Length: 391
Image (tube, rainbow, N blue to C red; front, top):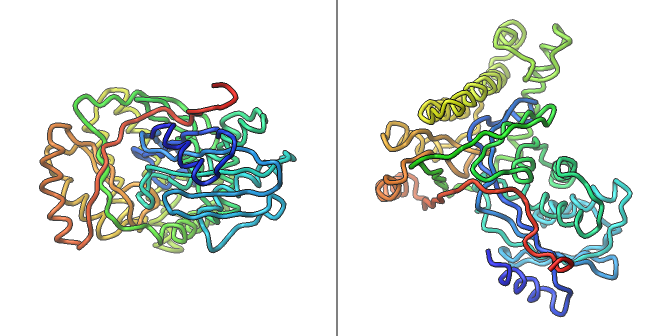
């Protein structure tokens, strides 16, 4: 998105104001490693070329004025009266970020902020995490707090926990903040240690197919899955005190201490344990340049998410079933929290046009929903794209 367009949006919302600081904050895809982050496992995400944009300038009073251009909604609150808002949901990702600075004893003045995004809302590309992170990054710059990126990642995660009420893991924030062009990040969600793996796909593109189903169930079911995983760990920990998360768990432990108690809890936990193993194997595939083997693991992940973890939906399953045996498709699966959003597909570039021409009418006839798509490229993480103090 052009800087001049972003300035124009800001000036329409806040006429006569100072020139804003503008931050670009990308969405993310996750190649493999789904629902493993809050179980202290590994994930393999990357920042993409779809992004949220925050334009912000400080005020001389204690008022926060917000404008969401894509929703055409405005919101105002005193900086001294911050609290989660249960009616205007999008503001919580911004206000929650402000609250994290206040918790650190940072005096945050009022500010004007406009928000726009070309990340499709509800597509599972982490538009919400992008907003929380962009706000944190922008305030860090304006307030000269000199926070390191990893600390800002953790602050943005807490903003979602405390204000949006979503007990998310840390993958979304980390990928968007730490992304590197043409690389995926193997992130250890326990230690936050990370390693970059080159992800140059010769003649292959990342194709995102959007079901058109807004994953409204994802937040509540996400929290339910966290509780289900925690229950499995609790049962194992009672027998094996060194086990503190599903990261420490084996399928043999599940056989002994979880399956006899509850078959559903066992299925949820077993998917996570298998997925952590799959990710380790996928990293070996990347080292060897074996994208076909990686793609097969993506399909295994989808099958597990659908039948074991219970977070897919009819439309996501339809898309994966339609593509899993297509010779031009190396890998396909649902991505994100579930219950809607996108599938991520590794597709030979020369075949994309024909694939869309075939699958779009078939999907729309089967579901009654419109299919949209995006070809994503892997880009750098967060960045300031206009700073009036340094221009």
